[in-house]
Every structure is written in structure tokens, then in C-alpha cells.
Length: 479
Image (cartoon, rainbow, N blue to C red):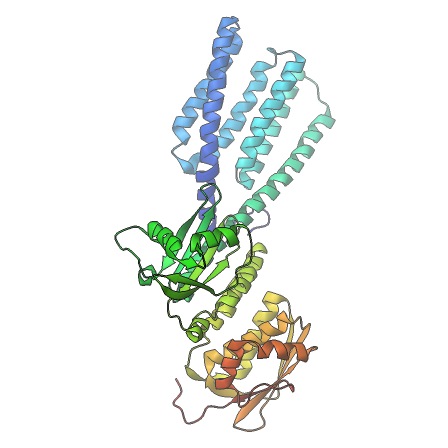
């Protein structure tokens, strides 16, 4: 994002943001201004006629005509909205010419304050570069009119107009920056929701809770037809509500369970066992922690096999890490980090791949460690005694290294050193040098994913010496 104009460098993001602003903010403002100001000017016209104040009546007729004609011309033409705001700000200045002789000083001061509020509304609704143009035109025009009418030049007032205006532009700049940041966060939330169904191969629901309607509404789902009792003749919302009502968890149904635990922000211990048509199943529920909604993910396991449940849901512990890392990158507007974060976490979703490749170990390990260093600002160094190639399950190896580094970070290791040596052709040794190996070792041994990966990749399980013996897979045709 350009730090001066606040425009996105991405050619797709900027039009998206502008269209959203026009549809959700500027279009509504034009309608409200046209209606309110037209009603106000109509009242002024009849009031002035009753008091026989014809000059004020003519001025009100002019503004009434402008508000009506500008609404007809601009309201349905969004690409011309910025001209509407420019013209309206300039037309507002004309009131200073016509109304100066019609009010007492105190009334004129109040009228000027009202007009300034109107100008301010127009300024903060515009894009920042347009707000600068409007401010310069408006302030310069007001100074010229003031000098023309007063025939007096007090440089302090004119300098103050631009000085206070600069403060106003600073506030508008911050407001616009926050609006664009919020837009990026909302976009991230939507990308996250679109991404979830691609990595979960089970029946699942993405759903929101509405505090106004006191109900749950599904926003996306996958494999709903596999659920017992799913009716293809009714819509997804009715099926989802029927599922929540028919599932039994103890003496309450699933809907009551969600109200009791999620809405009251009580922790849910996964997996949750439930009955559906007298059959036992399991599900997992996660708060997605999105910016503007109470959104949740429900993954349903219909296999009733404990080992299979754990295997299928092994990715879910990394979902929140992924979300927080991506959110941190987007908040700093660093799209390079966004791309790296995606690559880093995608490698975890291939830990079950059995594809064998000949890897350049130097390049692979350094690439993963550099990604961690960039995303998490961690002190990671990798040392090789020579160039090393390893025949192994390539994606599983990358997942193992990634998980090892995650465990190092979760145990708050300030420095991480990976030293690689190749004593013979049968295996390659990686020594992990960290400040607190004991804590890491306990975390490692309690991580089922790590223990599963080391069976295929290491000569022996990890011991307290922190040496990982990567086996060379031989006599296999490599892909």
C-alpha cells in the first residue's frame, strides 16, 4: 500500500475496496444528503415566502434545485461519485456569498459551523487523495470569499485555516488507513473460510451465530449428504438446524450445547461425542476468531473409529497458528510474508504423502528455516559440513522439520541451531542445539504427528542427545 496515497499496489484490491466504499458508504451518504438537505431547503422556501424574505427564498430554491438534480445525475453512476463530492463542496461555498447579509453575527456563526460539519462529512467520506483536493479548493475558496467580503487581510486567520486543515487531513489519513486495514482483514477472513473446505475431507459446517436472531446460520458446508438424516429435498439451513436438534449430547441436543458453551465463551473439549439416530459419532468445534462475526467450524466424524478420527483431524491444531500468522502479516501489509506463511503451513497438510524423491538437503532445510526466520523473527542457523542429498519421503521430511521448528518456538527457544553431518552413506545426522532440550524433548514425545513421522524418516527414535538420524532409502525408483 502506498504510504502517501494509501492506494493498494495490487491492481485487484484497489477496485474491490473502491467498489465496497461506494456501495456501502458513499451511495448511502448521497441518498441521505439529498433527502435531508432537500427537505430542509423546502422548509426554508415556504418559511421565507411566509416572511416575504425573497432573497433567502431564491437561495433556498437554488440549493433545492442543485440537490435534486445532482441526485438524479450522480446516484446511479458510481464512477462519478468523486465529482459529486467535489462539486458539492464548491457549491457549499456559495452560501457564504449569499447568506452573509441575511443573518445576525451569532446566527451566521452557527450557520457557518453547520456548513463546516457538512463539508467535514463530505471530506471524510472521500478517498484520501480526493479529500486533499477538496480541502485545498474549499479552504482557498473560503479565504478568497472572506477577503472579498471583508476587504481585510489577517494573515493569522488564513495560516490557521491551513494549519487546522492539515490536522484534519491527518485524522482523515488515519481513518482511511484503518478502513483499508479492516478491508484486508475481512478479505483475509473470507480467504480463510474459502481455504478450510480444501483441507478438511470430512463432513463439516462453517456457521455464524446471530445475537439479534439468537440462531446459528451455516455459511458453507461440505459432504453434508453423508450425514444420517440429510434431506436433499430441503435447503441447507433447514438440514443444519435439523442436525443440531437431532444430535444428542447427554440429555441436551447439540443446539443447546452450542448455546451453553460457545455463546457463554466456555471452552469445548474436543472431540465431542454425540448420538444421532442411536449411533455414536464424534465432532470437533473451533472458534475461528474472525474480526466481525462469531464464526465457528464444526468437523463431523462418522467413522466411530478413534484412531481414524485422530488421523483425519491431525491438521486442526495448526489452524489457529496459521490464522494468527496470516493475520499478523496482513496487519503489517507485508504480502511477501503472506505468501511465505501460506507455503510454510501448506507443507504441514502433506505430511501423509508417501512420495519419494532425491532431495538437496542443504536447499530444503535452509528454505524452511529462512521462512521461519521471516515470519516469526526467530534466530535460526543451519550448518552443513558439505553438500548433502537425501533419498527420502520428501514432503514428510519437510513436515517433520517444520513441526520440529514449531515445537522449538512453542517451548520458547531463543536460538535454534541445526548442525548436519554425513558420517556414511546410510544416514545423515541432524543435531538440534537449543537452550532447553529437556522441555523440547517432552513436547516432542507428546506430539503424535512427530512420532508418526519419525518412524518412516529416522533410523531410531529421538533420544536426549538431540540427534536425528535421517535414513537414506535405497533400492527404490525415485520420482
